[in-house]
Length: 145
View: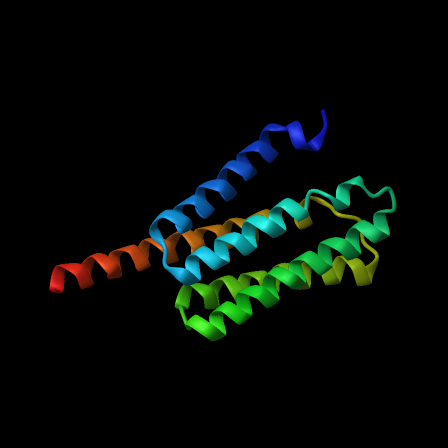
């Protein structure tokens, strides 16, 4: 069965869309920009699988993770939110994971898949938590007026 049709991939996409929709609906400017970044890079991560050269695929994944980490870092520097700091650290772990497997010349294995998925879930949870915190802060601000 092709990867894009597998149940796990569909659940992953549902989680990505749920976190991004939550950020767009409940979050502030920082959460919305992070949601766009996560959604765009998640979409772009589908394309390296189409390249037959596995070494080029690995470099593309490393570049995409670097782009996400850099984008989240810029957002963290601009908005100074704790959840963005957590997301940057998690994305740094993911970037390091890709770099290690690329430099060591190791094939992707179950340990890679597990760490990659846990870190991705952590970034999505950080985004959703940041969105809920921004929404609650706006509600408290309105209630105080």
